[in-house]
Length: 607
Image (cartoon, rainbow, N blue to C red; front, side, top):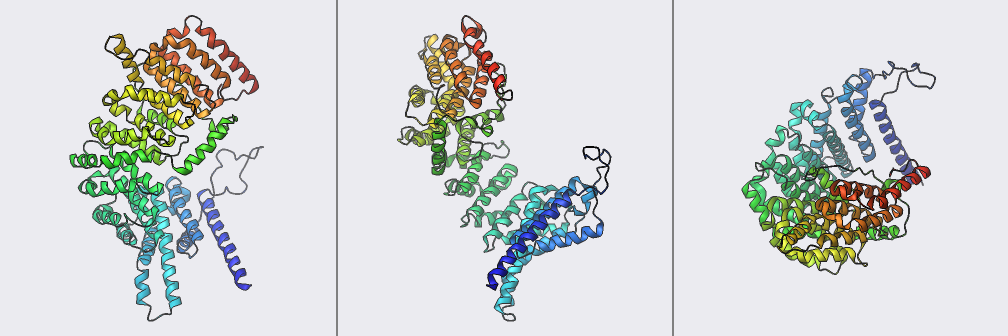
């Protein structure tokens, strides 16, 4: 029984040590006030007396020595607490020079040399073990190796946190001799047999990309070779970091990617199809970043290489838009809860503000993308689905229909006709994603695609997610609907009833019991009205009749979006909404609703 008790005691002791490290960190970054500080009747410190206690220099030296010792501790939790304390103290020293100046990188001359020493010791642990195997016992040999690897791990963890918090300050203030040797030491650590060592070393090297110190520039070829050697690493996290490093280089220093674009693009294509979602998401960022490069960074060879991969890449992006199985299960459960008609939760109700803009004015791109994201997904998490859709959108805008449609259309047509509603939903999302870049070239196909989208929106068996994305995509092609009506009026063919068909389909779905569908329909109707404007005038009476019903039925979140849609209609349709019997249809119900809500709950967000 002695051994279990001893192990239990060690666990408790290490937990106490970890807690002590975190308490020390909190005390250092937020020192207590001196005793006998004057306060008012409510116990608040009087102005002018907020000077906190300062740490005497000899105590600062002792604490710094103790923290450095602890990052080499055998216990992982202690190393983690010490590394967090070091990084937080160094970060705080940037803003609190008077009380924390002793912990700045410039005034902590032993920090970087010690980190380098620990990393080098970890790199040499195997060699040291072999060299001493004839003079020491196996147990002592193993203990020395564990010590060296623990120290290396703690140093890598500390360095990563410092690079995440204060990369530029670290590059600027660290002792130049030791700092220049960090990159070679980290490159050696990439060859470690330990997955955590490879992961932390690569994360550190990736963090050097944005400040780009001269030591990384000097060893850039070695860094790229290190990424290549880890491209097929068994660890998914290491592979993700390989993709992250490549994307960071592409976005900030594309000149280092240019000579190797063929092999890098091939690797990123394979990584985009990785079975591990985190790796696939990081790799997918490569295509989104590539589409944002300017003409100077994106050479003709790079463009040609990427276009050559479109037959494999674009179908893969389409696959990435399909919800994964675990997400589908989650959405099906959410659909069932939505159908039960529960009240909106506080965390579900984000504020919605009507954005007034003159006709013909273009929204800021970031706002538009944010709105689109809200339409085709159920949360704010950045996922492979969202990244795939955004990448396809950006690539279609960059390369145009001649390069996008030939490799995409076969997979898109297959997906649109698929029996699985989730695959159809992803294909409709892809159709909406290419609307801006390929709308003109898709015109011959839209007479068939448009009725298909209307049918997916109206079908009672359609999933709520399918109804949402069909409404969003119909709104993306609203300008084509307007063009068809103008062509019909000018005797050039076209269908003059399309505006009415879309308006009717959207309004019929406005009373859908699913709250996500309600929000999607209101948003789509707002976008559709922006494109059609006064062409909606003949259909206003039935539209407002349903809008008034929706006001009575909707919960807080849906009602907020509906208010925004009403604002858009007033702005884009103009005078017709105030003519005839229309004001009597919607103004009295609105006033009654606001009065009732103000009486029942004055803090309701829809007010």
